[in-house]
Image (tube, rainbow, N blue to C red):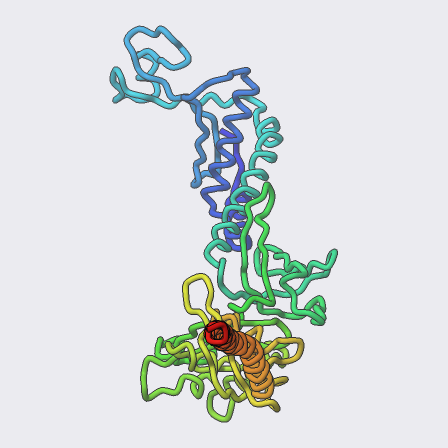
Length: 413
């Protein structure tokens, strides 16, 4: 047996406290390392009956070979005679198994060299699995971290047992990420690698707003108020649609809080990002009107309403057009994301001009057809009159010829 003392157990307890690695993992790793070192030392390729046993009470560890008790030994590596087995255990019988210590002399130094590498690798694997399992559970949730540094436009955030990466696309534009500052991030994804798992976090995800509302608004946590949809342009503006399952509870008022206390806390957490809280409605017209706020709406016309395309035409007063569209189209863009409807916004003057243009085009197209019909009718009547006059002339000429013939006949007589 090899005396290792209590230092190993103290180290195991420290690893379990600091890194969450179980003591059993370290002890089993040590035992496996000793078995591997023994096989290498004894030039044994396959020895399924070899194991290392640690006595926690005495602090000793040794290599043991398990052999079967037989009357006649045919394979001394896996069998032992009954007579020899009686020397180890008086109560042993044939077909029983006994453990025989086979720890070589001066094996401690060899075992230590081999065990160091195996234990280190096992600890790394256990640590990686612990982190992977922990953050797989946190995937899709909010967590708090500390900014460590900025590398190649990526922000490195320590979120506990590992450092997470915040890519540039998941950062808030114009936000300064100072090392040492605490930050609330959303765990987007966890990727398994050969080393520690790679955790991807976001500071611009819409779910951050949702989590903040769930933390600040008790009605949402209780299920009285529901968040139906969120549209966010991080650092600038967010629209959130809410609905109350209790007719006595105002969904918008609950999110704003007494004197705006709840919404002010959330806005402060988001570094003064503007938040529009709108009331969700199953009626698409009412929902679109709410989503376009703070602009006033004159009318909403549903153009198409099918699974593939949802188009709506929104008419607003002339003085509300710029407010409805928003700076660089931000308001209507967020309304589109919030409702899922493609929204076309026009002013009252624009609609009147289009209606006037359409009306003039209609008159211009219809008038020539009417004139052609009138001309066709007139030409037919003229043709009939000409034919009647020609027939009348022919009839008059025949009468004149008959009269002349009669006069000539009278003169001859």
